[in-house]
Image (cartoon, rainbow, N blue to C red; front, side, top):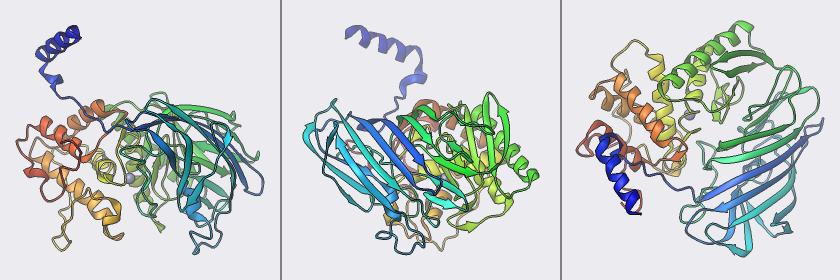
Length: 453
Ligand SMILES: [Zn+2]
């Protein structure tokens, strides 16, 4: 012990640069998923998902609480849908024994007959079948394509209890930590699989067995006769999938994707996967290794807007995909920063960061409130716009674009595969920019929410 102590003092003295110690928000749970999904020619799916969940919190668990978001699209929970999802749960097991459970909205609760102590683990298993609504959201059928986001039971983080918030249709109300996944997929022959996994291939059939580590979730799209443009960049296969778009436009999107992807790799850090898939359909949304970019909350968008959405969603591969934050309580940390990174890329030759000053007519509110505290119409102004503007102002006072790029490279290196909250971000920013107080955060961030500070 003394040896380590002395060694750490030598390191601290030898290199003043390392005195900043990142303090991550602990995930509390750690999961290994094994998923089997099959689809028949009528679009009926059956799934068998087994999850080994390790208790890495300090508390013992007497129940599991999981997200099961497909249940938000049934006729009971979404009576407005024309073709709601039909879901049937066939079995729920704990450590291979049938278990009782309750499912209300997107909360699946499973009592544990024997509690799980810290460092103990439990195996959860669920077999179910489902259909996909044609007017869902992220979990939806679009023409003859299927987009399966959050289609399986997902383990929340455990931070003084299961950190499971109620589903909302605006923003991301689910928060999962870095997990490992194995999957097998069985889909009809005339469809193409496009997923978070690296092994998808097109044209030609994918193998149907997949494996990936350290990702927060798995997205699966099942596409009928897509058009595709593929580009290779630094050994990463970037693929753009469209349907009715012209070849020329697909090619422009692929160019934009490659340029922004290269910029983020150069200025933030390396991308961890071998493939990045961009589907020009569905709402602008990020998933590990895959993004969708066809609309914004149901509003159709121009070709120019699509390119900006693609850049924003690619930026999320770093801010969300590798640096994690709770999108319910600290959404600005991935949304505001992805937006900020997008504009850094779009302003290659400028020293100062251009931003739009917000009108004074809005009610002043911080950018880091839990989602339910915002009105749905203004939520994005605070989470995306206000945080972007204030970051731009701060960096412009401290060296402009170059400082911002250096800052985010360092931030990424320190927090890669960790969870950050607002207080921790501010703590690092104050260290990096040598700020003496919180004055630059007043009015747009609410500080002091982290416990034991
Ligand atoms: Zn975003």
